[in-house]
Length: 389
Figure 1 (cartoon, rainbow, N blue to C red):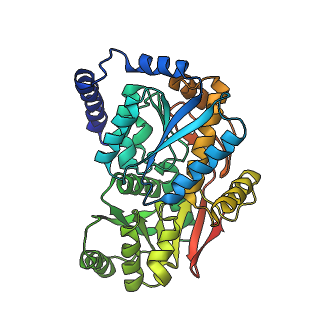
Figure 2: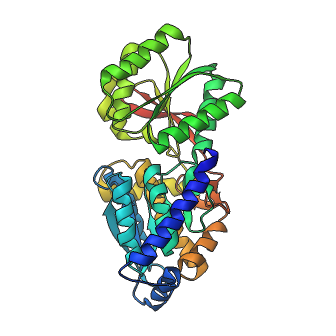
Figure 3: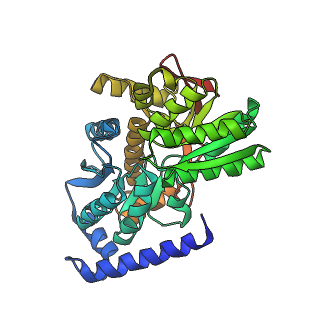
């Protein structure tokens, strides 16, 4: 993050606080206390919101629903049923903010599971913090999300620093020491590309070039980037820091022009859509992910078998992360003996060796996780295959 970003974010937080204190229909001097009191009075249910691009990534909602059903079948949370309301943010920061205000207006809501895209999560985090709603993002990896140490903002996925480090470690271990980076013009793309470049430099690798592309760029513009690289550089690997569906077409163009060139992406590419959209041109694509579909870890097998039984298909990263977030949140509420956001936040920070479906992990004071294993997967013959560790 550039030096002025932190101050800008703090100023934005203050503006949000002032504007919505003056303009809110439910004027209150202390929205956090008002929420706390409403939650204490609730006798029948614990209320949670789930936010993300539900129509674009339906497996995410399915994972959350699966966890909700498991919890309620086992007696609920704190002896109450777990009630989840779903909101589709369309992967849009502005729509996400609108949803955040709507969620925050319901004083019974203790927490939000979401959002998914880093840009949406960052845009909504200040709103949730101000109104006293705990936020647990299952997929947002940008360093910025937790950098300011907001007391109610958490994630259950490693940050881009971990993804970037594993990507460059794997490249170096295969002798791919000269790399070029193609990054999407988004918070996620920038954050992952920054992490790759920083980690690569520490590893003694050479980042020969780094170019960004927009989601609405034409194929010819991407081809021109590739043509320039072919002409001016000798490189071993391309890092693609982007999201689907655009990254799929970018990947296809790369493999058309450079059929034997390894392409390495982050967890955003670890989706069945990559193979469905890219076809044979998706082969030889590497991704770093929290999802290991071949895992024999007991918690993963329980999640996997329950998901297949409920939905008749294989789960993916988003369904796993959504499921784990709800289970972690419910566990923290049980540990805290309360659904009050501040108490749940304290319980989350105390989490050690949580038995998640992707393996055990612990929570840091800043709201990040540590200890969660990452895997490298490659698209081979039309499917993802784990190749490391």
